[in-house]
Length: 270
Image 1 (cartoon, rainbow, N blue to C red):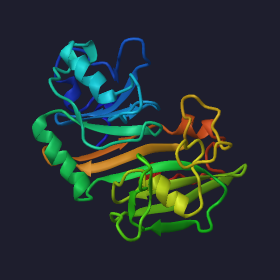
Image 2 (tube, rainbow, N blue to C red):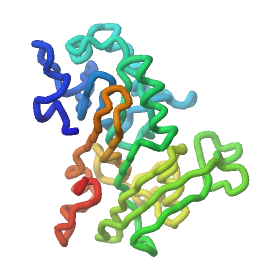
Image 3 (spheres, rainbow, N blue to C red):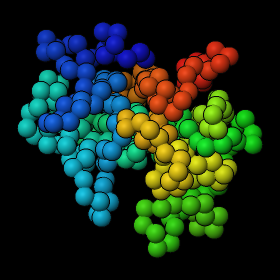
Image 4 (cartoon, rainbow, N blue to C red):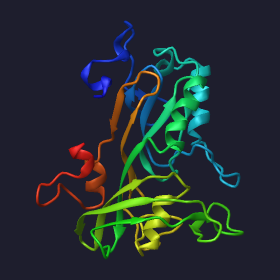
């Protein structure tokens, strides 16, 4: 399904009220809306926004709380959609940018969340790492669990970790860095970061598992991990949903342009 915000089809234009293509919170940059139908809404999450901030982190960037407040206050982006409810159905780390999906009703939360649990949600990320992988394509199936006595940190735990699987593909190497396509099958905390680390690859700008010297110069993309594709069959409309997030600015921020041979990545091929 094409993005109705872009092509004029779908449910977004059934009313006469012009719906803005972004969320807007006071004093903050707008957050683009990438896709919307009757049951779900997808945004392009900027860096810094958390869904469930750790208790030791003081932040005004609690995205779910900001959305709930906007709906209660009848902000125009929410009022124009007649939104009464909007709840995230998966998570992105604070530093990770890209596609984040929300359910527009309590009934939709379970139906959409089940797609993640049943592994019927296709997810594609791109990551920028230091160095070059030993293989051009590989899959990591090592289980992941929390690091004892280190709150918020995860590691490969072969004895007590939960099953995890991620497929990787090298897209390009340039200037000592590599661009990797990541396809997580499961959805464990920090899964892509841990499975790349297992291959001795550190994501540029990663504050938890990276090298402090390997930083990004971009404020918009301080960490080299971005969710660029989400595809699934909506259990309510029975339609195929295909959501993409722009990647050009991300690539430029980390010194990558179009692939030298002109070959599109898998998410571009669809």
